[in-house]
Image (cartoon, rainbow, N blue to C red):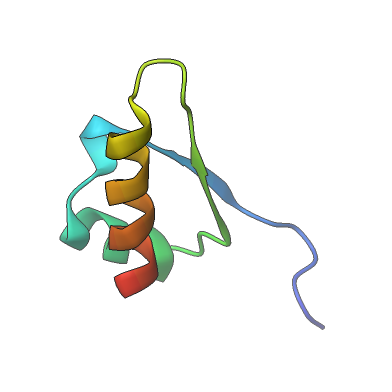
Length: 54
């Protein structure tokens, strides 16, 4: 039976490194959420690019 529950992780400074992102994906992360309240658009764009590379 396929898993129907999605795992959403908020990506910020503590989880920004590629190795940490890979670990989150291996652990089952389905969706990466970027909180924009404390980031600039440029920082968010960099994080999105990093996530897409993985």
